[in-house]
Length: 164
Image (cartoon, rainbow, N blue to C red):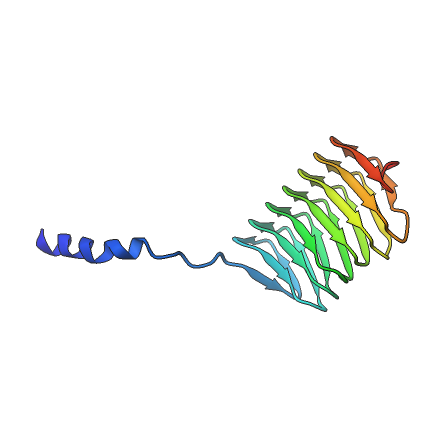
């Protein structure tokens, strides 16, 4: 009994130590059929293709990077930094928002977004088609008028996306 009590007393302080960070993934290629228990950070200047992937956190797209998200689920947001090259989200579910600002091309098709889609100050081709958006669909100050249609939007359709 004493060794068990001594072991318990020695191990109890270890329970209060901070846990290791979530298993984040830095992506610069193709990833398929797995779960990421954290965030996905696309490597700057590279293309990250996620197919059949579940992300328990956010997906972050930095300057010069491309994201292709296909038949996947993101429990957080898809977020971009200024100067991203391209974001494509098809046949997927995003539980948070898709926020693409001051970058290039954006395509969202056959996707459910449980938050908002916000496309602002982008210079490339923008397309939102057959998307289900629980929040708002907002497009402002983009160089090109976004195309697409057949979207179901629970919130407001704003700015350049008013007709989508």
